[in-house]
Length: 395
Ligand code: FAD
Ligand code: DHB
Image (cartoon, rainbow, N blue to C red; front, side, top):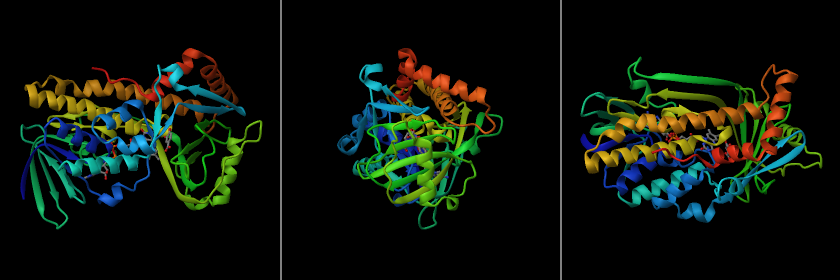
C-alpha cells in the first residue's frame, strides 16, 4: 500500500512517541512504525528518573496527569561511601528544581494513550522496516504490516527514533557519520522486588566490592542495581546471593540494611557511551538512543531522548509554519551540545562511583577524595545537582 505523511517516525520509545505527539499539537502529521507489539513496548523495564524538564514537557503536552498523581517527587539523592551518607539537596542548590521517579514503561503507556486518543497513527508489529532516498526531497520508508503486506510511506522527513539497535543509523552511508564510543569494563545487575522502600531517596553507594544503586518504583516495588561483570550470567545469582551482595556493599556505620522481598525480575545491563555526529543525514534525523547511548549512572538516557524530541519538533514546526529550514540545519549542533554535557556527567558519575578492575589504592583514594570534595563543597554539590535535575535546552 502507498502511504504518505509529513514526518515518518521509526520507533515508539520515548523519543518517537514524544516527537509524534508534539508534532500533532503543532498540526504536523506523522506515522510511527514500531517493530514490537503494544503489550511488549508497554512492558519493558528501563529507566525511572525523569528530569524536571521531562516532567514539564509531559504536562505541557497533556500526558502528565497520571505522572503527577503516581510519580514520586524526589528532592535529593544520597551518596554513600566509606560508611557515610551524604545528601545532595536539589531544590536548595538549583532554585527549587527536583526529579520525579516514574517508570519509563508508564511514560510509554501514557504517551501511547495520548497519541491514540488524539487519532495518532502508530503501527505496531511493523516488520522489515527500511529507509530509502534519504538525501532526496522525498525519503521513503518500506515495511511489512501485521498481515505481511508490503507498504511504502513517502515522507517529507524521517525521524530515526529506533534506539541503539535500530535500522536508521546503519542506513547512513559509511563515512557520513563519526561515531565516538567508550566501553566501561563492568555492567549492572538490576532487580525488581516486592518490598517497602529501603530509603526515602535514591542511594548511590560506592564500595570496594562495587557500586550499588538503591532506587524505587512505588511504595510496594523496589528497583536496585549492583555493579557486575559485563558478561555476568543471571543464573549465577540466587536471591540469597543477591541479597548478601547488597548487604555487603551497602553497610553503614550504624548497621543499615536494605529491606528484602521476593525478586521478580533480574537483568544485566551493559555500560557504554556512544555519540554519533552529526545526528542527521539528508532528510533523516536521529533522536534518542539511535544517536547516543550513556551509561545509566547519571539517569540521562530517557531525558536526552525527550530533549532531542523537543528540539527536533521545534525545528519541524519552524519549517512547516514559517518555511524556515535554519532550525533543521542547526538541529544536530543544538542537540549535541546537551548530549555531550550529559555524556560527560554520566561518565563522571560512573568513574567516581564504580570499582575499576585492576584499580590500585591511589585510584581508590582519588575517588574517595572526589566524593569527599563533591559532598563537602557547596559549588561542587551544586554542579552535581544542576546536572542531575537536567541542564536547560540551549536555543
Ligand atoms: P528506545 O526506548 O530504545 O525506543 C526505540 C524503539 O524503537 C523501541 O520500541 C524499539 O522496539 C523500536 N525499534 C527498534 N528497531 C526498530 C525497527 N527496525 N523498526 C521499528 N521499530 C524499531 N534513562 C534515564 O533517563 N533515566 C534512567 O533512570 C534510566 N535508567 C535506565 C535503566 C536501565 C536498566 C536501562 C536499560 C536504561 C535506562 N535509561 C535511563 C536509558 C533509557 O531507557 C533510554 O535511553 C531510552 O529508552 C531511550 O529512548 P529512545 O526512544 O531513544 O529509544
Ligand atoms: C534508576 C536508573 C538509573 O540509571 C539511575 O541513575 C537512577 C534510577 C532506576 O531505574 O530507578
